[in-house]
Image (cartoon, rainbow, N blue to C red; front, side, top):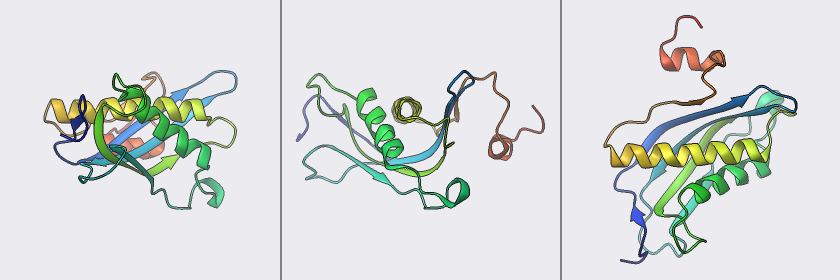
Length: 155
């Protein structure tokens, strides 16, 4: 086994959605859609991250590189094995879409969102189930795109 003390992702997990919103001074806003796939043999790190978010964010902007990097860092932190530098799960994770706010989205918010996404991926594989939306701060009203995704008629 090329990566001792780490588990290979046994199947693809598509449709992961994490919303991490806290209302406070300074704000805290991140929403992300991701998918994970088993990593092909021969990858030297055992983890690969791809930022596949199209360049059509709010006001036609690209997702800032530091937010995408923070999401990847959150994945690594959540999957960190005893050796410290490598994830405990061997996987390719693709960030396929994201929502952010110019003032209220921070690397910290996206790092936490990455950690929550990693935990949901792990749960999907261990429990042999499809992903469920992860909505941090359930007291927040549903965001417009969440209503149809969750089948919600009203808040």
